[in-house]
Image (tube, rainbow, N blue to C red; front, side):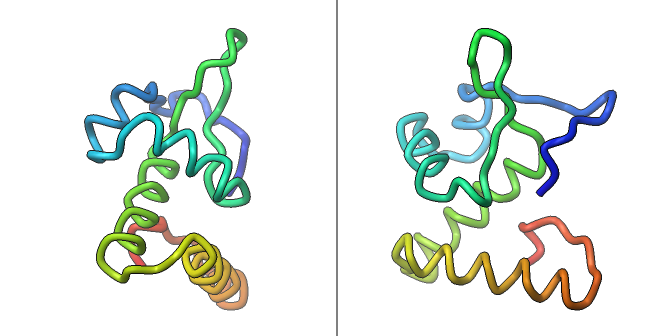
Length: 99
């Protein structure tokens, strides 16, 4: 996932993302630490989190893997690594929600 912001990127704050995804803010903060190689919200100068749409997709994917596939955090990391390796191998750019 690229950390570069493009002009015009839509950024959402943690409250908006929590309401949109149904994931508590404390869980979002925890997932940011637990899945740091996959979930990297942008930080403002005042250190507030701002999420891109790709971050929201990743959150929804993590939520699905935990709730529907009953994976542990380790299982989620392994699954996400497999997805990224497959994408790189096939030179495919997909949003995480498509897995």
